[in-house]
Each structure stands twice: as C-alpha cells, then as structure tokens.
Image (cartoon, rainbow, N blue to C red; front, side):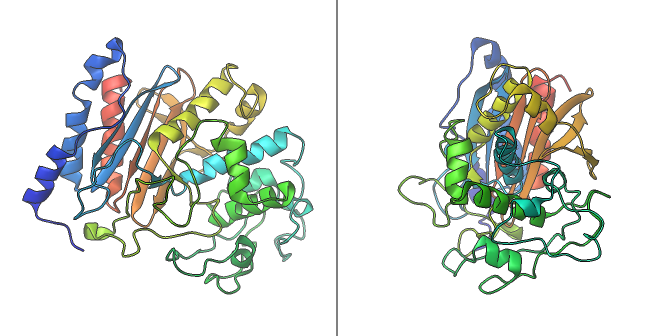
Length: 378
C-alpha cells in the first residue's frame, strides 16, 4: 500500500499528535511546551509514518509521547505504549543479561566460550588454532565470528530454532556461522556474535531465552512492554507499530521475525528502554544494583574497540556529542524500523527514539539534535 496523499498525512499528523503519557515538572514545563509541535514538524518534513520518544532527566523519565500512525492507511495513532522493533538495540539489553551471568560467576569474560556452549560449538579452522573466542570478544564485536546474513521471516512461516540458524540447516535460510578472522584482532560488527551470546545464556541457564530475559531484565526494570513475541498484537501487547519500507509501503505481514533473537528481535517502547538506560546510569554512580554492581557496570561501559562511529564497549556504542559529553547507547535498524537510544555517562540524562519507517534515520537524527539543543545546551 502506497503513502496516502500529502493532504491526508498533514491532517493526520495534526489530529494524532496526542501523547498518552506525559510526565513533567514545573521546571520542565517551559522546555516541553513546544517539543510536541517541533517533533510534529520533523515528522511531516521527513515523511515518517510514526515516532515515539522518551526523555530522561536527572535519572527519571520526565516526558514520553507518541506521534503519527501505527500504520499508513489506518486510523490508530502511535502512543507511548505502542511497541516497536528495537532491532540492534536488543544487543545492549542482552549484553546486560550475560553480564549478570558473569557477576554471578556462571561465565567468564576471558575463557573459551566453547566451555559454555553445549548444543552448538564454534567450528575450528585456521583462525581458531592459535586463540579461542571469548565472551568479551563476542560482546565487543572483536571475536572474528562471521557476520552471517540471517533472513527475515514472515510470522506465519516455520521459524528455525537458534541452533538450526547457527548450523544453517532447514528451516533456516542462512549459511552456517563460522569464524572469518583472527579472534581479538579487530572490530567487525557481527550479528552472529550475539547469536552465540543467546546460546551461551540458554545453555548456561538451561531454559528458554525469552524466559531468561523476562526474569533477569524485564521484570527487574519494569520494562512492561518489552518482549520477544512472534505473533502480535495479542492480549497483552495490543498496540503494535507496523513496519514500513521505502515509500512508506507497509510490510505485507506487518513485520518480520528474526532468529536467533538476541541480535535484533526485541519489541519495546522508548519508556521501557529509558528505564533500562536509567538503571545503568544509577548503577554507574553507585545508586542502584538491580542487575549489576557499580564495578561491573563500569566494566561493561569501558571501551574495548573502535567502531566506525566511535568506540564499542561490552554491548554499547560510546560516543561524544555536542559539547563533548560522553554517551552510551545503541542504534537499531530492522526492515521497517529505525531507532536510537542515548544515555549520558554523567548527570543522568538521555533520549530514546523509535520509528516505524525505513526513512526514519532523518527523523531520529533531527530529534536528537532538537533534544540536545532544547535540554542539554548543545
């Protein structure tokens, strides 16, 4: 289905600018008063179908609002409770879960991960003869594991298990995961590396990945809307943003499914992801330890390698923005969804932005700059 007429979209943007969650203080009110109209202008200019935003200030979610449509041609608006695919932001959330395994003494960051892998082992080749692959390398994209192209599946298709995907056997439609370069030598972004992190979690815990993530992360941090469901909407998660391809054509099956799940299958909201960032920010200053203590949070955020946009730690991109403030966070891109989250290492502020459009990067970057200018003095 193609994008409706410009007149129709302009009317919809005006009518659907209502946010269903907006928590502000008197101090914030002046800054937030024009934010909605500014974001509506960005939405119109960039032709993004829907966007949802949450802002963190002083270690709290102080504002969250949805704009636009869940799907072109429909009448349902995006709200603060609408879930989007978080794509590669999933990696950061999964990294926190495995770091808790490390803190509990169940895994090591520097031992051969084949020690923990039970159902599937990393195949040996010329690159693994001299050195083994470690969890620290997997988390920082320095393991040398191939960046296997995992396909997108229709939710009604037969979805492979994680092990089937790692082996590249039916019903998986990808090649087997292998080692493509020497471990520890360089940064090379790899979805496959996080597929292995998922397998380490399930083998170590001896239970399902979704159950692990709920128990260790979602329930602890009140991430109420975060999930790895294949079939949505359902009784629990009713407001779901459909993905849109180039030209804002809605994906025929509404969204695609990825397997293994750990590199990009998370559904979430900006508020949930803001709560995730806040816990890490509070732990970093010694004010919370729901998941990690201060020492291990610092370890998690310590840069390990240099990526194209800055540095990469154990699950996070580390970058300086604006006036030289250092942020941790991650971007995400699945077919039909683009998102980004940023949290400051000091001061407890940040922003999470989620869109349901392939052209969402322009909106994400403009909203980042807008928030930086309005609230952070950038």
